[in-house]
Length: 186
Image (cartoon, rainbow, N blue to C red; front, side, top):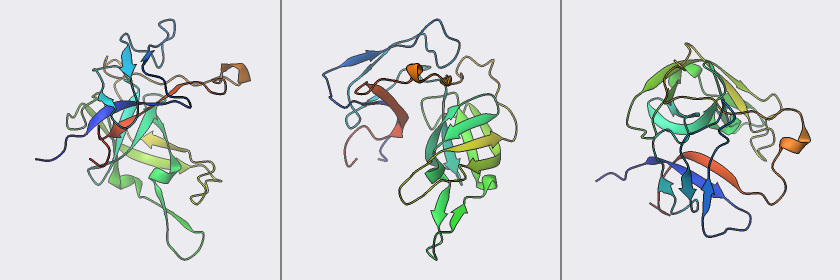
């Protein structure tokens, strides 16, 4: 039997505590879920409830799960640059995966359930991305056609303003979200 891979909410904590309840701010229209989720840890994480993280999408390359990304708007996804680059082993040349091989899936926490799937028009890597030390490891994906954001299973993530006071303080708990296995070496 193939191992099941689910969207799991992962908690990265500098000083791991027993349990944390994460709930979103109901006064905002972005990055918000009307449900709370209990988070324990990364390895030994858990399957999330439907619509908890409705702003995350899965990135597929040649029909295989490859990375995750955050929905910025109906046409743009934010992700890591390392998801789309590789070295040609002849120096510092970074080659990029062809956007025609990439699709974005959104609207479900089960990677096998197809809700909204979009082709990719363009992948933009940060111009100073360094694949060896992962500096500037950020990329934007432009969809070839927009998501239907009236679908309640989709949302968009909140972005911070330029105010430094909005960033999490040092030693804060943060949430990492993606598709993965629920057990170590699994």
